[in-house]
Length: 198
Ligand SMILES: CC(C)(COP(=O)(O)OP(=O)(O)OC[C@H]1O[C@@H](n2cnc3c(N)ncnc32)[C@H](O)[C@@H]1OP(=O)(O)O)[C@@H](O)C(=O)NCCC(=O)NCCS
Image (cartoon, rainbow, N blue to C red; front, top):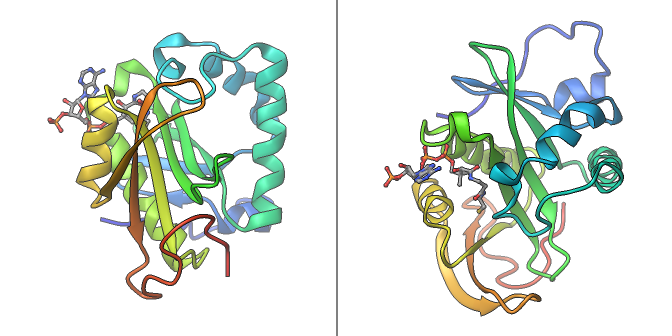
């Protein structure tokens, strides 16, 4: 299972259109400034955010992050998507590819609302994001970081073929796990550190 791109442009920005993906059950749309209101709700939800690096966000923090997400797409050629459940047209999360501030390279991030966790949407998004990373963004390697106690997060990463590389202590003193997957087309050009777009 991979992703496919929409056939019609629907009057949308052609750049964003090229980076909108469909999987069997999800639509992945590049985050733009227009998503600020609905992402503020998601970012304020502890059930979604508490396991992530930056935790629950205030409205101002959320707006700043959304502005960063929106800027990353044109600057890098990859980025973060809103996740919409196609059957209901509901926003059910966000996720995508971001350069990690701890120099772990480009990392996969996924956060879904509790109502849809456990349905395999995380792996569905993860597979599409990794395929995009390797086939469209031409990255050599995608990493992911999860807390040692985040078993659903680790299951998701293992289901999409990511390999556990090592345990390390994060900035807050928390035990974290580093996972990675290498682009089978490019070979293991960069084994460590920052992964660059081609
Ligand atoms: C981690 C996450 C992205 C996984 O996505 P998902 O769509 O739930 O993934 P799956 O449906 O494949 O479930 C993965 C496993 O976790 C279990 N699981 C999922 N949600 C769970 C929950 N809320 N509580 C307990 N177990 C849960 C599933 O039963 C499944 O177990 P199995 O593989 O042994 O059958 C999602 O649960 C989530 O958004 N969590 C909050 C944010 C987060 O932790 N992000 C990941 C950081 S790496």
